Image (cartoon, rainbow, N blue to C red; front, side, top):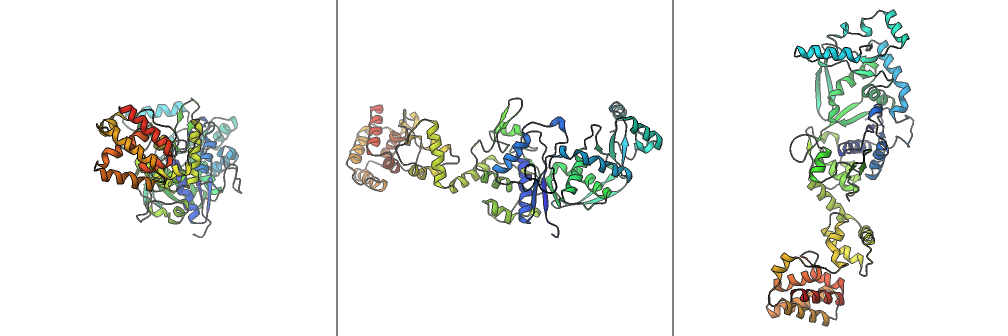
Length: 503
């Protein structure tokens, strides 16, 4: 690539950032870094009616949490700012008027009522009204006005919009990095509005002007923008500019059924669709991956493979691996089905990679919240539980018995574990533990298992009630690791309590 690669992520601040948008940002980031380029954040806030307070800050915080920060954007001013479209308002009208001067756009004075009436007339004939080449010469616009009438309207401040003049009977051949060659018949296109009566540009004009003035070389965006590709390419041509390369990413689809992934799917099936928790202006709270306990690296890995195939069997990629492996040509054309279970699988894999010190800190926080002061080694607890956890909260769920003796015992397990001689067997275990001098799990295991084998009792009749007495249910690591960590006195007290329970 001869030019320095520059890509942009251009969300609208109308609410929380959907993970589909996060994936778009990620692919832009990976493409930029793979090619030694720049990743730019641009806030597209031309639609002030839909602007939501706090949405821009949310977007920035989400990118930072996911460790895919932008190189230029709000708060990181470069040579191409400002990076909010609302702050660039003054430049767009000049570009719209250049298109009028070149004959590629025109003033339209049609009122909303006039357009509504036309739509009704067309619908009454079973047709759809499209404002374009076949009727624009008969409508209320500058194409049909004498210069003095037009000048008078503009002088009087008559409300107008500026429309693009789409060519008739041309077949556009467009190239997409993912989808290949695309042909579009311009006769089917309407004359899109470029500039609104409120003095703000539409997305189409602002998008093209900003991409040009920010020197964007590649536009990597969602599939929903594919219908706009023809207009955008024609706008570049009308201005006499070289168009960037385009790539339209596939949708992220529902886990079950058809259609794209929505917040409703997450609410229904119990998983987040936003990177961070979102507090809506109406008080509604939507869950986020961060607050749900997911690691950013797990979310990034999951999203990277949701529509892109590395061409190998490898599934685990840290961010640097992804930068090296990413190839836009290996992005799928068809939608990628979201899989909540696979997301949790990635989370589990990355939790296993975490340093024990990270998990010890997390466990300390959990204990602090519960008002518990630990008197056993948290490093050893973490070492025993690590393989069993997917989230840090699982440290408590999987290992609460290390810090609190069971207040009750699982009834179903108790019915299965307790026999007529269980109290006698457990009393023998107490004696063995009491007499144990070498205090480690291996020595404890050898001693007690040796006795069980000699006595020909059967391990199930010993190990099930023993675990139940220590834990309260049939969970946890090796029972002798538990005894070692609880200590002699605490282990014996718990077994005695269980004997009393079943007496």
